[in-house]
Each structure stands twice: as structure tokens, then as C-alpha cells.
Length: 142
Image (cartoon, rainbow, N blue to C red; front, side):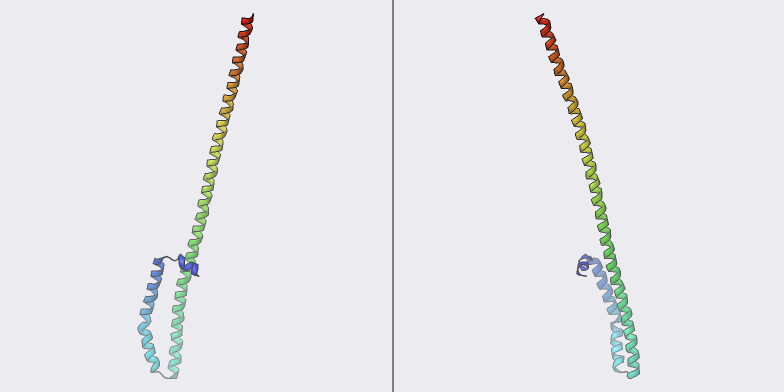
């Protein structure tokens, strides 16, 4: 439960505190009146009032428990959404990285193909030059 307390932002805490204080302020006069009535009652009435008072207290407790449960579930839901969004972002980053790698690999292959073609052209030119030199030497020697 302590990790969840860290997750609740201050506005939710303030709202919850405000609701609790409103409930306490709302029932404070009733509590004081019930205590005065309790002091002045006979046995059967006290049992009846104790039962109704415990019933009211249980209703308020379940109401607060529901609110806390809703806050807790919303925190878990937000955590799951953040986790899913994080996974989606990581997947998109991986996809971008892979596409960049593919692009660079394709560019490298194109560059290699161009270099290979240039090398072939150079070798052909050199061979042609050597052949021409050889022909020229044959012509001059004759």
C-alpha cells in the first residue's frame, strides 16, 4: 500500500482529505447529540441507538472504503496504461531503429555496389591502357 501512496498526486490527496473533513464536520453535531442522548437514556433505547449508530458508522466506512478502492483501482489502471504506453513507445523506437538500420544497410550495399562498379571500370581502363601500350610498343618495334 505504501507504493500506492506515492502514486497518488497531491490533488487527489487534498480531495480525499476535504471529503473526509466534510463528513466529519457533517456528523460532528450528530455525534455530540447522540452522546448527550446516550447519557440520558434507559437500557432499551441505548441498545437501539447503539445499533443505529453502528449501522451509520458501517455505512460511512463502506462509503470511504469504496472511495479508497476506486482511487486504488484508478491508480492501478493508470499504472497499466503507462506501462502499455511505455511498451508501445519502446516497440515504435525499436521499429524506427530497425528501419534506420535497414536504410543504412541499403545505403551501404548501394555504396559497395558503386565502389565495385568503379573498381571494375578502373580495372578495365587499366587493362585497356596496358593493351594500348602493348599495341603501341608492337607498332614501334615493327
